[in-house]
Amino acid sequence: MSRPSYGYGADDCSRPRPSYGYSGPDEPPGSADPTGPAIEGGSEAPEERYGQVPRPVGSDRGQDAGGADDGYGAQSGAYGASGPEDVPVCPRHPDRVAYVRCQRCHRPACPECQRPAAVGILCVDCARDIERQQRQSAPRTAMGGRTSTERPVVTIAIIAVCVVLYLGQMLGGGVVDQLLTFAPFRALAMPWTFITSGFLHASVPHILLNMMALWFIGPHLERTMGRWRFASVYLVSVIAGHVAVLLMASPMSPAWFGGTVGASGGIFGLFGSLFVVNRRMGLQSGQVLVLIALNLVITFLYPHISWQGHLGGLVLGTATTALLFATRPRASAGSDRAALARRSALIHGGVIACAVLLCLLLIVVKVAIAPPGVFGVL
Image 1 (tube, rainbow, N blue to C red):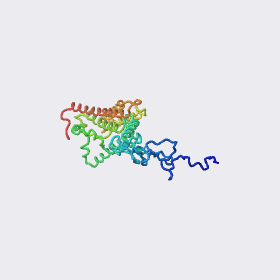
Image 2 (cartoon, rainbow, N blue to C red; image 1 turned 120 degrees about the horizontal axis):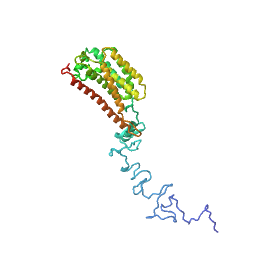
Image 3 (tube, rainbow, N blue to C red; image 1 turned 90 degrees about the vertical axis):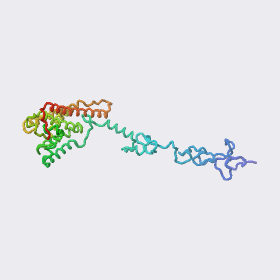
Image 4 (cartoon, one colour; image 1 turned 135 degrees about the vertical axis):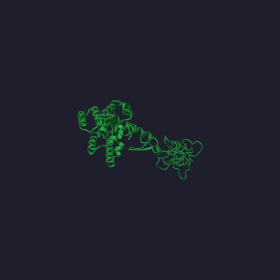
């Protein structure tokens, strides 16, 4: 009498058992469920161990028979090695391998093309693009120049040169005065004196008053106009003051042979610039007019003061500053501010050049109308 089998007792050993991949020592590798699919090309079945993907027999670890990618991120049968087409190279130098990438565009950059930045490493192109954007958004002065919150370098430099040359006047035994002082009769023989004489002074009160006035108005104008525009207006005013002395001096008078020194011509030109700047920017300009009027009164009341130099510097300094404002390019919405700044610099450079040419033209006129032989050489 036979007992029924419920699956947990002794089963009939004559029935074949399916193989689940656990090859024991007594089971051949090819034993499997006869009801499963047959393996093409032979009797050997792919080996499966603990849930891994079946691989063909005879393949190495991580590489199939064809040497393709095995799923571990390696190709051509090597761990961690990429093909030649995957090696990152610098776009600007394709012959250089670059593993550092730009933090902005994520392109590889070789050491030569890397630019350090606050966010990491940038490539050359991104660094230039950011710099161009910063120039576009940078604030500008009222005349289109670069703003600066640093020290008034030009004003300090003018004061320093005046002080050094005054010490040279005191200690040089008259050599500095002889070489750098402007006098109408030798203006053609020593043309540099049109500028250098504006940095010389006759006494301690003279240099103190001029330097105090320069320090009071210089820093404000330098920040508003920009450094090179401020320096240009000052030098043009100095030249214009001496040109006015040359034009108004008679060859038959003692003034023709007298020297003229002092920074007053340049400072009067800055007084005129201050009036134009304040009026254009909506600031107080009435006090500047009072200041100019008081200085002109002092100029005409006291002797041994070159009113011609003061007046010439005031007129041309004021006119030049007004032209700088009148010719500045107007910015509109979406305009290229960096391009406008370059255009403004070119136009204003032309205005300064025209002011200097006007001074030269007046000198030529004076030479043409003066009696022959009045311009001596010393």
